[in-house]
Length: 63
Image (tube, rainbow, N blue to C red; front, side, top):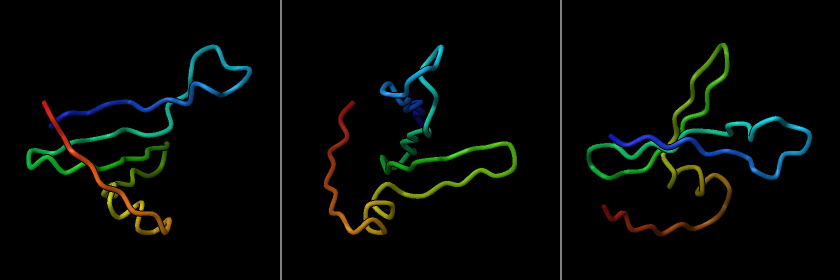
């Protein structure tokens, strides 16, 4: 499993770029986004996130 922090580098008036979510690539190569706050952790597949937004996504994972 690989985990990457996705940050908002366009945020203004911040000492460092705030983390928006984590991008997780599981052992099968399927990407997920994970959103955390103090009370809840929510994980959704990247494909499902785009489907809910009404967008189409295609991806290739190399590495």
